[in-house]
Image 1 (cartoon, helix red, strand yellow):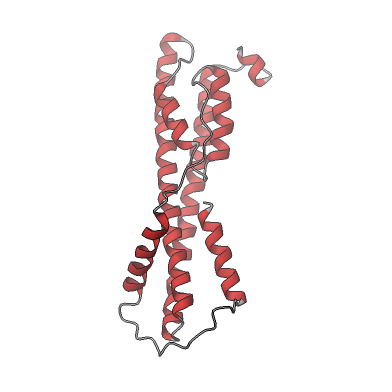
Image 2 (image 1 turned 180 degrees about the vertical axis):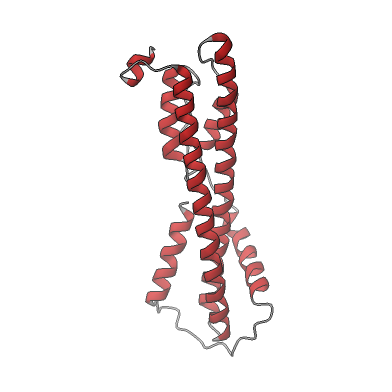
Length: 204
């Protein structure tokens, strides 16, 4: 497929690769910003946990601790996304060097593998799908798989252990007041807000 057909005008292969690299750097910056946001939010949640513990509200403390666990998992996925973006960028740099000799893009197993890994990560999936389609048309990679990242079935059990560890580390010096019983069926607006925050983190 000619470059003019792909982009509507004549474009050199190296220009296309540099365009992809600019997009990758932009996504890396977005991920770094999201990680900083999660870290700031985690500090706020830690304070909320301490406040809940001091008033004996263990239910809220555990919900907030779960939010921290999910936030840290989201951050791990973001670091993985950033690593995949970096791998793709390095492989594209190699392609630029190869083009100086051959004058054209060649199929790259390294780019293909990193793209298939990246496409599974929610934080960058949309960008990678669009870039992957362009790479397919340019003959750089074969058709990429668009399967979403599957969560571990044991993740919920592991989360409970992590929640306990989070609470232990945050509440080490906190002496809670006697716990006041709370009716099971009552869902306050605070509970609703906390559940919304948990749902948002699980989608990152």
